[in-house]
Image (cartoon, rainbow, N blue to C red; front, side, top):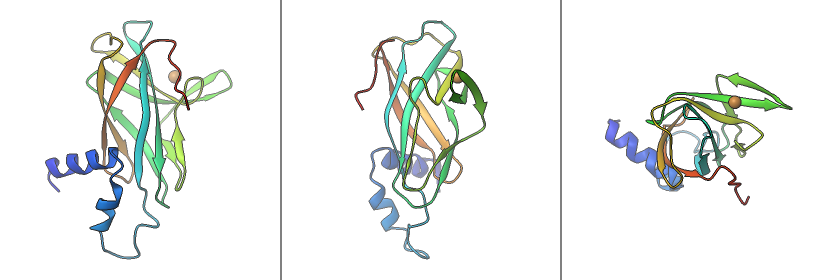
Length: 155
Ligand SMILES: [Cu+2]
């Protein structure tokens, strides 16, 4: 696959157009054991500090196979780490599970992304490009809005 083709496939995944992609597979045993990912509800609360921000999103997996979110790249931060939260303890992990037929939900007070070494301080209304990398699935590119500090998703 060319880089351009991968980007197109990732964009299609981000839009939830997974049906068209799986239709052209036509190999062994169908898509039942493969992950089919889509990303929704992403946002960055406007950071209080100039050099660090949090990020939240949900990865939904309509396929039967599990996947893992392994890293995120963005022009906003030179480093993005994945964190889990247990009680008040936050711990850096190397990947986050996206269960088959389930979802990975990153939310305020729970598991989250930590953006450090920011290239600039983001403003409310700005859209930040994220590329999500997975253990199995192709990378997914999304635009993540910067929301007010007090923003909470409706979900
Ligand atoms: Cu953290």
